[in-house]
Amino acid sequence: MSAKERLDYFLNDLAKALVSFKEIIESDLTRYDEKELDWIKNGQIQKFEICMELTWKSIRFFLLTEDYEVPDSPKKIIKLFHSEGFIPETEFNILFEALENRNLLSHMCKLELFEKAFEQLPVYLSAMQYVLNKIQDR
Image (cartoon, rainbow, N blue to C red; front, side, top):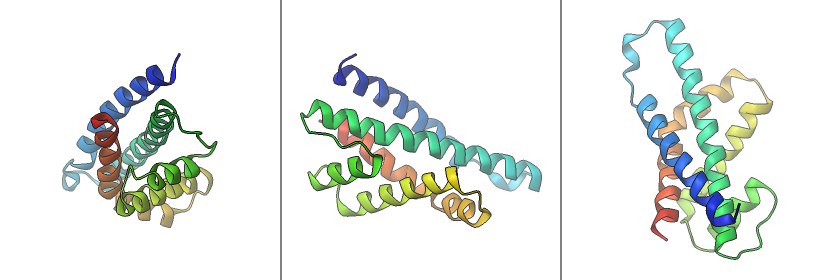
C-alpha cells in the first residue's frame, strides 16, 4: 500500500473517530449517576487515545506523501509537522501535550492524570480537527 493510500485510510478513520469523539464529549453528563459517569469518562478517554493515535499516524503519512524524511517517533513527527509550517504554535503545543497525556495515561495509572486529560478533551479535539482539516485541504 502506498503512502497516499495509507494517508487516505487514516484520514477516513480519523474523520469518523473525531465525529464520534465530538458526540461523546458533547453528551449531557448531568443525567448520569456516579458509576455511569465514570464509565462514560473512561469511554471519552479511550476515544481520545484512539483519535490521538490516528492523528499522529495521519500526519506521518501526510509527510511521507510530501516527500519528507519522516522520523520514527510520534513526538518527532508532530515537531516536523510544526517546523515545516503546517500548524501554528498553539495547535502544536496542544497536540504535543495531548500526545504526552496519551502516553502517560497508557503507562501510568494515576487518577490525577486521568482528570487532567479529561478536562482538556475539548481542546485536544479542536487541535485534532485542525490537523484533519489542514491535511484534507492540501
